[in-house]
Image 1 (cartoon, rainbow, N blue to C red):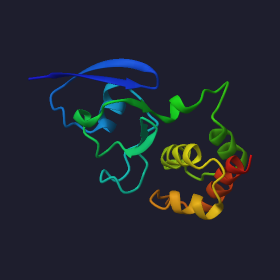
Image 2: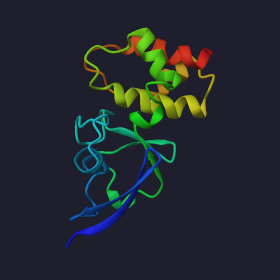
Image 3: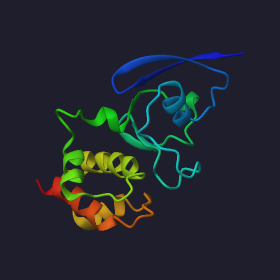
Image 4: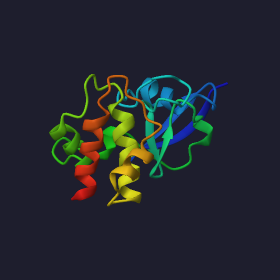
Length: 153
């Protein structure tokens, strides 16, 4: 029997009808709301491609059940707009900090939480804070430069 689940994403309220309240948040975001920036990577919460902010904290949406979501979900699309991008989005573009871009969502969303908590993070703190996000292309150095650009400002 379908259940009603309220969800607030990027400032908008939604009411979803789901068969299973333990459906991963990622599936609701992509399949029900049509968002394409949290990505399915590993499905185990290890790679970071599915990262969103839940009340400002980075979470792996592929392993967070809808029933556990109480608060505001922010996706990459809700971080900034094309007219007013988040400083991280600008820095990533300026540094050309991706190759294929599949993991970009995880890096920026994790970095957004890090920058908010540590606005003047050192390179060591940036590396430590992002140690669990994976990039198969090896764009790590340009990603670190992009984030350091924001924390140095």
